[in-house]
Amino acid sequence: MDPDCEVDKKQEPPEGEEQEPPVEETPSPSEEPPAPSEELKGWKFLLFYLCYYGFMTQLRPGESFITPFLLSPEMNFTKEQVTNEITPVLSYSYMAVLVPVFLLTDYLRYKPVLILQSLSHISVWLLLIFGTDVIAMQFMEFFYGITMAARVAYSSYIFSLVSPSKYQRAAGYSRSSVLMGVFFSSVLGQLCVTVAGVQFMTLNYISLGFMSFGLILTLFLKRPKKSLFFNKSISKQENGVHRSELQKMNPEGKGGGGLCFKCKDSVFVRMLLELKGTVRHPRLRIWSLWWIFNSAGYYLMLYYVQILWNEIHPTKNNRKVYNGGVDALSTLLGAMTSFAAGYIKIRWNLWSELVIGVVTAFQAGLLMLMNTTSNIWVCYMAYVLFRGSYQFLVPIAIFQIASSMSKELCALVFGVNTFFATILKTIITIIIADKRGLALSVHPQFYVYFGYFTVLAVAYLVGAACVIIRYKRQEHVEENQPTKLEETTEQKVPTDKSTIESHA
Image 1 (cartoon, one colour):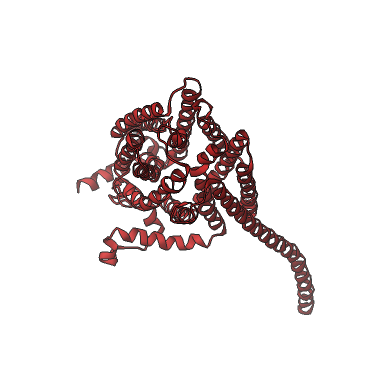
Image 2 (image 1 turned 45 degrees about the vertical axis):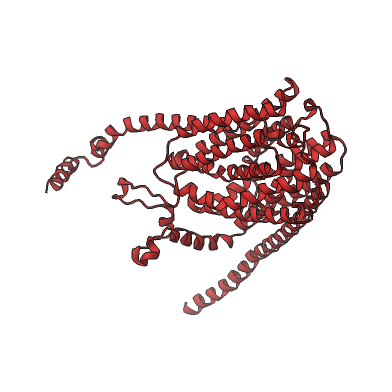
């Protein structure tokens, strides 16, 4: 009874003035100012710490020089060992751990996976420092694959800590901090090698120090109380029941399913059913295919390009190895093209295939140039342009895929696309690079990559021609429709007049 009485007392004053009391009487405005201010301060500090963490964990100045280090007299691995035995393990490791890490990231609420990533980074550099045989380097690539798979934890971590209204700003700041970290790390490594004459082994120790500091930073990260799929928070604003975006998409999914409803796997069953509808959407389909096929070729090029550089420009003088500077320049160009892509406004429903086809053809030409030139600087510039063109399409693909889906479905689509791309990349690696396959050297491999991107470009351009022709035909039909409508209306008007005259 007391709550009802209180409600009656609160409802009596507004009888005289119906508009003003709701503004002055409600206690929420008087109580809200402190909460938003505290929330704002907490959000700013959290975002600052997360960006600082993302920047510091990218400081690995020795990363750009891993392949020259393995081929140096200090380690004395052969090109065949690095190309056909060590590097392929990265693709296998990434494929093996991608799905478990993706699931554990959400189930364990991000922070444990970020700790695992830091421990794996430390393992990478410990093996580079103390490892002496092929098996040790294969384990190094295995742990490096774990670090790559665990990147999803950082990219999705911020969305579980801030409100939806701050997603865009938070994502932009966190991505910028990562790119700045990669850029600064590459510049630092190049300056250490070229200016200070630091040995590759010393760079490994410096990288190990930064990764150890990154592990300490990871321990102080806030662990979210909720995540996208498994862990759902309780919201008092909705009568004590939290409805996720997935539940909003499927409001009829009530608790009548017995054990299947209670099973956590049912979340993914419902989401996979939702994905069946997204596959039918042409725009989502074309950009998902681009994500799968082009990213597979992109990362294969990325894994083996340092071996190609060493083949074109073999040198025992570490000061003449410019891998760090090239990585820094390509990162900067990639950030610029990604930024510029956000300002391009065209009819993507019509021109997506054409844009993808032109960029892919350009990348195929760059791969041929990289593989046939004997000038290392030409190869460097082709590599920079290749990475910049790929990074140009990444934000467009993200926007095209994410703009028409919920947060949960978007995360699942990106996960599925990445998984299929990893499978494709692994299959290509087994066939052309692994010693149990064709075991091709680096130059024949790049011919294969050139043919791969050429086939993709032709397929995209043919698809673009079909879309444009279909659009022109539809436009022609729509132009003829008004004339037909006018003829039908003209035919109807006399009949109406005749009926009127007959009635008169």
